[in-house]
Length: 79
Image 1: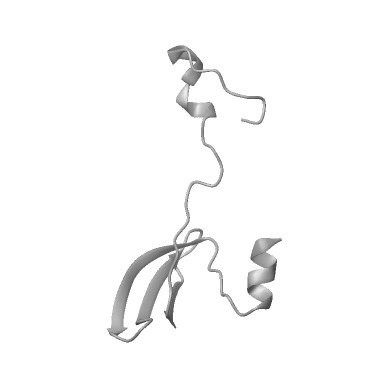
Image 2 (image 1 turned 90 degrees about the vertical axis):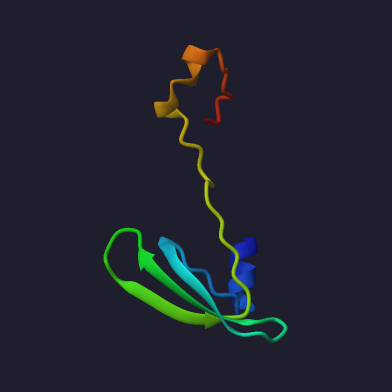
């Protein structure tokens, strides 16, 4: 719901893209930034200008292949 609210107010989300570079174009406040990114499931390159960049990773736990039970780690049923 928060993401939807933010999008309704002009925040742009780039989902399923990996950043290649973030370049400062102007030393204003906030600065102008050029972002280059590549699709996670393709070869398309995206380039855009922003004044703020936030990167978030690791939203879903990738625990099944870690064999944590062998180390005595107990996971909740959520994972």
